[in-house]
Structures are given as C-alpha cells and as structure tokens.
Image 1 (cartoon, helix red, strand yellow):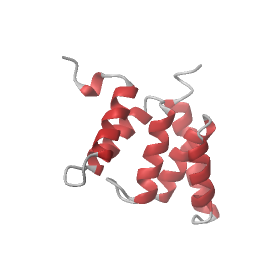
Image 2 (cartoon, helix red, strand yellow):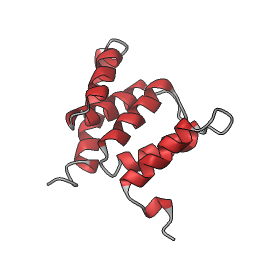
Image 3 (cartoon, rainbow, N blue to C red):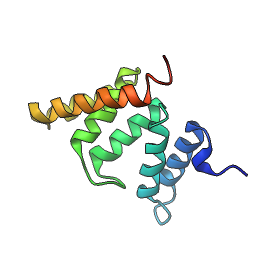
Image 4 (cartoon, rainbow, N blue to C red):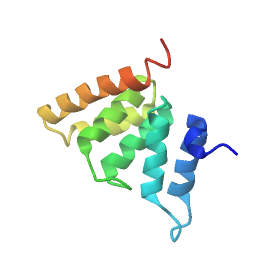
Length: 119
C-alpha cells in the first residue's frame, strides 16, 4: 500500500477535506491544514485555496493573513473565483506592506509550486 504522503495531490486534498468535514467530535483542522498544504505545494488550485482559507481563519494553523493572501493569490492566478472573492475581503484587512509581502510570497509560491508543473 502506498503511504498518503506519496499519493497524488488530489488524494491528499481529499484527505484534508475528510478531516475538515468530519463530524464535530472527530474533526481535525490541524490534519486538514497539513494535507491541504501538501497538496497545495504540488500545484493543486483547490488545495491552495483551502490552505489560504485555513490561514485566513486560523483553522488548524495560526492565523496569518499574509500567508493567506499569498496562497489565495496563487489560487486566484489559476482561475479560482472563490480565492478571488476571499482576496477582495482580505485586502481590506491588510495594510499596503502586508499586501506587498503577500504578493512577493505568492510569486515565490507560484514559481516553486505551479510554474514548475506547467512549464
């Protein structure tokens, strides 16, 4: 059997969803965030959106609006309308320096986790 860490980004995303949507007494946002992040680093747009959302809301990870901005910007650059809507709301919360830091981080993430998949 192949360990989940070595499976596809879609399988890892689905594991994140399983942990996020579990019944309340079994829900594990920390595990969900970890699986979404693994999948996001493999270039999956929906996982990048969820990673941004988890950081924006502080679910399973420490709340970090700059990190959220970066992941949401990467997902939006790949056509995620949900990420674009979240970015619009998040921009109102961040000052210009935080937005700049988020954009710089997003460029790195895009180069590292998206453009290498789609040269």
